[in-house]
Length: 224
Image (cartoon, rainbow, N blue to C red; front, side, top):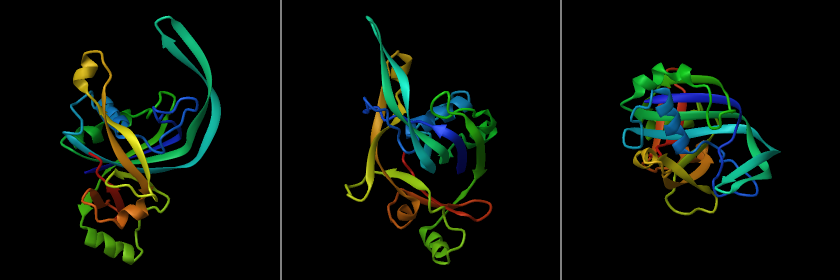
């Protein structure tokens, strides 16, 4: 199992349903992760069937500015001036369990951008981690040693509505057969967005606790 850590000074992951204001997801959606992994490995068959992923991370702030956005149609183009939201000082922790872990580790240095073409990846680090039982994780948290970053947020599969949790509808991955045929089609899912500390106290079967080589505790939820 791998933990891929990416840091960017700025990032934007557009929520498709937004129009007059271009709003970003707080973290990258699963489809962006799969696209990144395929790109750096020379387009190996990395998809929800061959790779499980988890996503956690945080940003320090949000910035709003104005952008020019051109909508192209068969009859021409329309130039719109739209307010846009951008994430600042963004850290992603991507958890990956796949038969292609070796290929991913070997190509981490290939990563230059994540999301938009202008969103440069300043640092990219990859390490092997190991899963531990929830009982062992709870013991570590009780002793308050090597605990998870309390500022970090996580995506988790939607189970049932809870008014205290934010839910996003996001693309999981594109459908290759449709892309090859010149059509864009994606599979979608609904995911919670919550603090990792809150996630760590849940007994959901999708949740995984893990330790790295420094015995630092991490918690995330498998999304696929």
